[in-house]
Length: 466
Image (cartoon, rainbow, N blue to C red; front, side, top):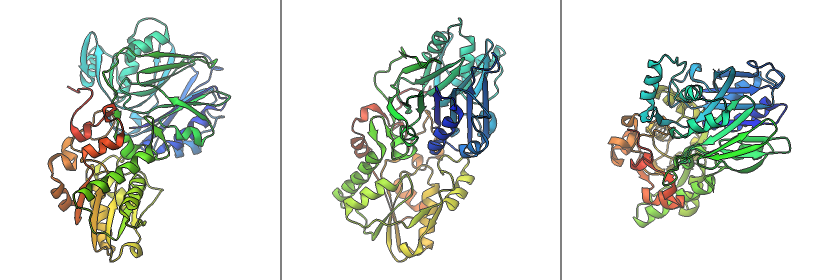
């Protein structure tokens, strides 16, 4: 999961792109970068990029349109899932192809590629390219796309891009900047979101729609699964459909649980409304089983637990209060690389309002339990602050399997629920009780579960990795 964003047709393209990136900062915080195309420069000097470690706010303070003039730009907030988390793997990745510099940003992970008439894993393709002397400068699967574009015969950019994208299997929401073209593409499974918007000057793209509205652009629609859109410098648009159409869609359900902003619409639904359904459904399931815990207040874990916590409180009739506060100057725990650093970030990110929780039976609503790092910390913090009981309420199912499409959970043994029962996890985090939303209840809340990837909950993968 990363944030991708860009624009075309604006004299201050870098300013707009940096502002878009600030609005999708929640999707990645390891590195940030932009690339800008300036048609007024000589061939070979028209593309500039700038990347740095950390959030894009740092980059935005340093760069302005005067520093990187141009009319087309793309950018990226990185949450590393493939390759290391250092600057070497920052996007945009830029390579020279037949005299032109090409920049690419990518949200998602590839799992297989059709290479020399064979379906190969990413590692195998990397090895094949390495054996024929193609140098790699990153550990990212995205760099392979650039090498495949360079190897593709012919000079026509459109046909080269389509030929390569038709061979990719996995999750990809891509923006490519190549010789005055801005190219947007989304994988045929529709795993990761991508939105298109505009104003009177030109077009903008971003991982979610709310950044477009927030900056005064009109959202047009989501880029469709398997759609490739070419924007030329005259703002002419040409669209194509990739040939590799799967039997059904596979939108990432975890986007609704954690990744996306609550004020966004992705996969045709409001994120906040779906999260509220999760909270209501959890109350219903617990009531049907007679297991609603005796609690005095409901406390959401901000921010991604806020809407499910609100609907849980409203549906159960138990008061909502803000006993856990969030430091908004800290990053997001789940997308922080490294387990030790995640533990430190939880303590920095959350604090307890003792007057709110002391002597009370507390029901804490968090979006999910992945590694149990956050849950263990906030249960401990609430207990030390004087809560008489802490009951953990999770409005999503148990996460039992790895994700290979854009989450940093490839090591299944790191997932708390992969080898532990709910009771064992409860004991580990120190809660008085622990309750999850069932997978069936979760599917009901999604509306059309057949269109979603639920692999992290079920182990059923829409694209086989091996």
